[in-house]
Image (cartoon, rainbow, N blue to C red; front, side, top):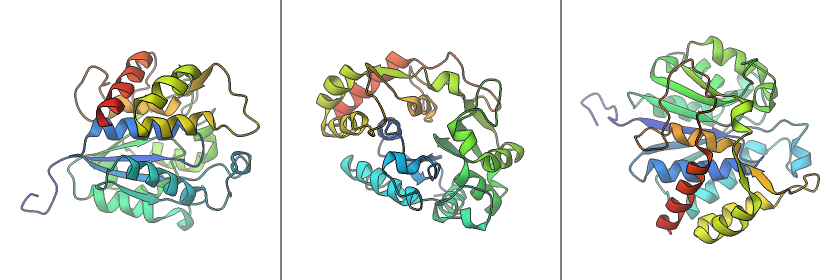
Length: 274
């Protein structure tokens, strides 16, 4: 700590709708493996679209809480007792109702660090609420967001359309944003056989992740490949290695994610983690 009581290292915030698609867990595990036990990490959970939550077998009123329980289980399984998991708002929008424990945690923890990187794989509900609590967050944080399309930054896909008001507020806030659009994250695929074999055999954590990925809702047909869209966030974990992508605020990431390289990196790290 410095004389002013501020931490010298950067803070990493990982925000996602963990009660929805299980690819968020794969991304979270990979992010924690890359960040290492010495990094300061906060995990926050956002709500699902209430119209889609029942299709995923979730209670629309408690998807952020349910996501916290699932993400918390993964964090415990990885023995990352230093990582906080905090539930966010249970509904989307930009009212006082969305100013949740997650938004407060983002503001309170980021104030202790010189820089904060926010990796968001879901709607921007919690990020917008944190900015309303403390507009100065925009000056010390960079957001990497999986959302929008190449042609439409604030719409055109699930994460942007689930909470368009939050998207508009964040994009207008002045916070530096790096965006990974629909066209990039939907290309992040892996063979179902690789999940059932390589991932499941890599480690107990890998086995848990594989079970989540193949346990699809009744309305989903499990095909030959699975989408790991949220894993496009992994190259933005602060650090330097062969899979990192330099953060250029205001940029849109396209044709930059090494899909096969990331998958191999995940399997190797899981095996080493045990």
